[in-house]
Image 1: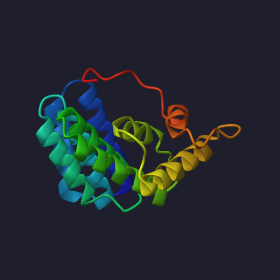
Image 2: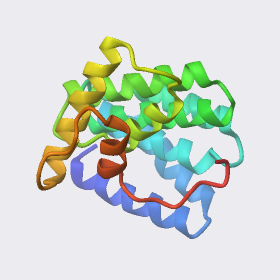
Image 3: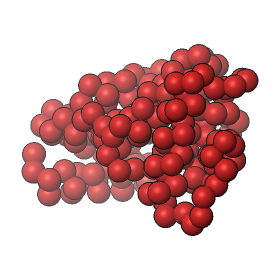
Image 4: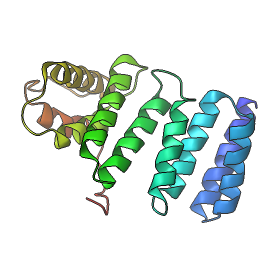
Length: 179
């Protein structure tokens, strides 16, 4: 599948999803999963999971896990799949699993391509009771500094207050119904 074909299919699937035409959206996804590159398959599986997450969280989580087998190391797509799995674990009250998946997403951000990880950083820190381990301290500081740099934020925050820094580098969003 060419990049142009992927872009056209992605546009059609997002439009169908927005219009509530899940059958058409799933048909586009099925074609990409059958004929696309690994990166395309990963993105399509993330979409399928997002479409299903309110009606069948277990199936959505499985799609995101499958997306990881196709997502390139260090990619934003991999980071998103890991974040979505962590969020599903949170919704299923699997706190330790959520922490583990958020940690994986932070590692992907720290070691991967150039993208910020503020939302994952904030979510991870919200689940941690007590002080961070030395390895988590180093990881979260790396992601905080990378996010700060990539977002082009002015000045220097107090790097010892990572929860405050996470508030500054996390994108603003509406609270989810399950929080």
